Length: 95
Image 1 (cartoon, rainbow, N blue to C red):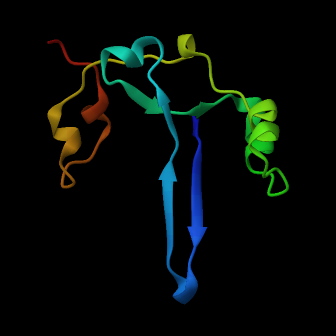
Image 2: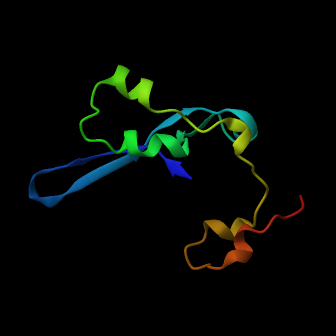
Image 3: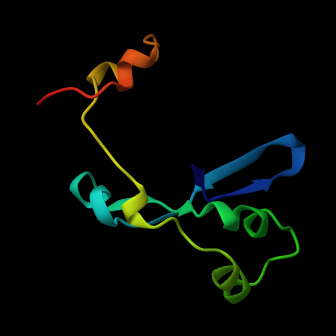
């Protein structure tokens, strides 16, 4: 899954970045009103092209992943704890 993002380098070697969001679509609407803009696989090369800088050109060349391709399920609240690890954190849980 490829999330769209932007970054900027600053003097002194620092940098910042952000994930681009859009209004939630599909199953994501049940979780939040915004979601990351997930790129379709065939849009990755265009998204990473440094020559592509104009908004209209970007919008024409890059497509988001169809909402139907995403799925979601409840997981353990332990996923939010940095001291927790392992695949068990993302196994589906019953509510």
